[in-house]
Length: 329
Image (cartoon, rainbow, N blue to C red; front, side):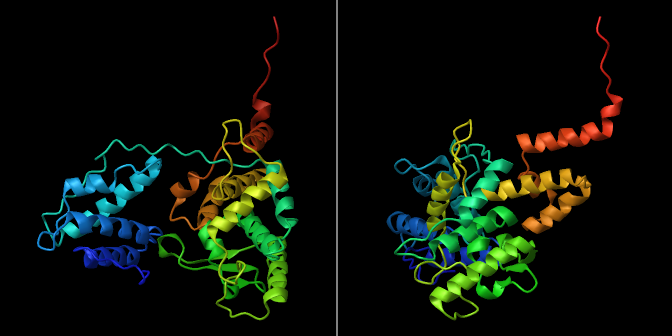
């Protein structure tokens, strides 16, 4: 946990114990510091040192709408305080544990924007030709390669940006993803062309920044620190424009995480074309993506036009002889 987070409410110590406990169980809690600070500020005003018990009023105040924020943000705050109250209730039974349906917060069902095969080719071309900037000469090669890696391997954004130099083994063409979701680590083999893209990126960074520590980020920002997610998102929008990729018929723009969905669907298309046994290949996909089971991977698979065409071709080749046209009248 970030030790720089300063908490001053009567529940400061339990809050820190709670986050340490969740992370020891493999929950990363990326936004924990922000939620801790928000709740701590609220508890300073609501609780007295002699009665440090969270009430339903405190919970409602914590998850109340703030400005134009989304329902998903409110839902995340409700989840955080609910989990904290469950943890705290073992120490102080007076603590109220809010039910999941405390407020009518509805998370919209998210449908990812999966790129077509043609869009994927355009994206890759734009990534590898994306220019640098005067104030950031490495931006094009570093962030272009990072985006290509997301599309070609299905890594989570945090996994890609968290890679250090020593995590990218160019000799064995593999990536060591450390402490990913649920605290799991894994080795991710990459194709030869992906490995060459990574080799070119590392060489370009070395020419600009010189010799760096093996623990240094593989994808550095302007000052050598890890490239930020916000910077990569901004570049992604520019790359989409360069590739001529816009909204889909439903008005959805691709997100960075949609590249992970796109990888899964495109890999399925490749296996269909190779006439592979998809039942045997899906567990391989789950392991490669770092999922704990098939159910997680199945949520990434969407029937796109490209995939439907391959499934139709495959079934036509296998069962087409059984379907005959009825003669006309």
